[in-house]
Image (cartoon, rainbow, N blue to C red; front, side, top):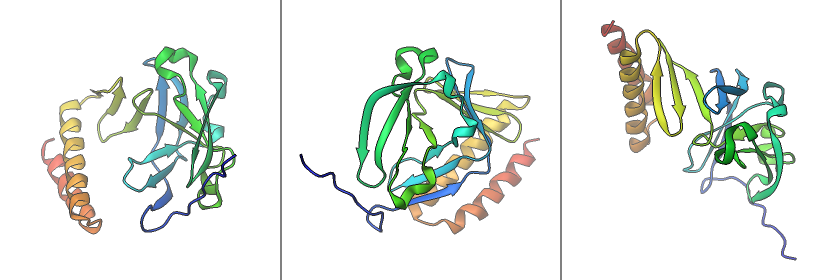
Length: 185
């Protein structure tokens, strides 16, 4: 049997884990909440999109069903999967967890993460809520047009900063975006 390779994060494959102060709500089948936390960890790995890891105490495991599906990441270790029966076929193996991660990412031990296109995830906005459901974004709240434009402006600023490789300019540009958001009122 071939030994599985273990790799350490570094400049060629960086991994960072930070606490996310925002509220993260995960739901399936349109409305059924399976996780709700203000203690999520955001894992950023190389060029992959950031992933929210939710602590087990903020997850309703009664709605999950452990599967036999297991994967292996040379940077994080063996990964176990869950399905959410309420979500139907779309929610098979949609939740994962590293029960025994490597030391470089030990902070995510026992936390769970979700494939965002297979479940919904809410994040609070200035005047409303941005909802990602079935790959479509829906906006709710009293000022949804302003909120949507504000989020689109934030997304554009962050994308431009990433292209320039500059993190410091994001803060300045975000402040100017927030000022223009206030002008729409």
